[in-house]
Length: 469
Ligand SMILES: Nc1ncnc2c1ncn2[C@@H]1O[C@H](COP(=O)(O)OP(=O)(O)OP(=O)(O)O)[C@@H](O)[C@H]1O
Image (cartoon, rainbow, N blue to C red; front, side, top):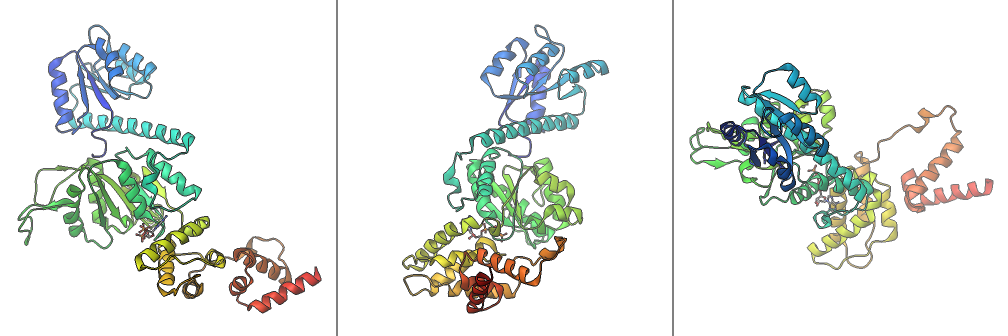
């Protein structure tokens, strides 16, 4: 399952010269690595073949008895506008080539063209058809809105609209052989998303995860590509790489933003060519796995800073999802809290504690820089210290307090810089009190803590305000 080879659709080769058809088929199957091929030496059979097969690309001769290549090109364009056609002609005539392109051909090659150039052109056309099909699938999904495989997403607890849209998108691109890039802060659930994408891929092979952060280039190459016996001192046995282990499944490269510059080149080559050389081997192996990459870094920014290769970034981000941080999907807090209370209780073999109503208000005031992993750890800690009955907020308050001391607050901004007229000190104070109460769900104890004053002081202030209103 490499980049543009073995597409889900068929490639139809139409030419009346049987020897040419055979040699073209061998080129496509051998060096090209394509498998889904149909040969046709009688142009009259083409319409029927279209009815019988899911054809995405046609390699078409021009000069043929019965129906000419030009006529077929015209018909295909009219009846199957999503099918791409490459003309393979014996004639090296500019006018004919221009005419064919005007009729909608994707490309035009003379039969004497070098094999590499022809294969490159075919790969480009295959990729174009794949992208068109994926776009259509995404559009269909937007209209449908319902997930086809909700069970795959069961481990991802959410009701957030952005997350559900990501699930729909993952279903739409699940058949694609292009890499998938998963972005998002640490602890947002990128690995869980990768697992879901792997399951959707439907292959029989495993999900093989490699954390590439901190791997030097040699270790990276050895881990991914494997080695032959004797490839280097100490290589006393052949060892398959992770790519081979992931055959028919998914290779998940985590922390891709931390990949060294030399390894970025190796990964780019792997994705571009769909093949690799185990260390100490002269014969290439095919990449037979879908590649999923994840990072908490801002790759686009890294490209601007030149610490991540632009060409690799463009290869990777054909399909991309950006998992929102927990602070942007706070409506998930009650669901996640309950989920983690249950899982922590099961793990610690305790009854599931009841969460007090003010706990959600407290959690709502916090920015969760460590995202869902941080919430999970807090809940686990609280349940492990919990004697029974209603859960205490103390553990949460302590952890949130500690995290705030070390910078876990929503980044401080100065809201006054955007105002033309500054409010008075009293007005600003009132606005601040209102904002704190709103964040704390009207819980005065919590709001007072946010404001850095005592609860009686807040209560007094509110009372004075009511009296002066
Ligand atoms: N939506 C969710 N529902 C339930 N559990 C979740 C959800 N998202 C994440 N988790 C849990 O939170 C923890 C962190 O998730 P995960 O390891 O997938 O995050 P990540 O984004 O890959 O983190 P990192 O960037 O640090 O590798 C895991 O234990 C995971 O099971």
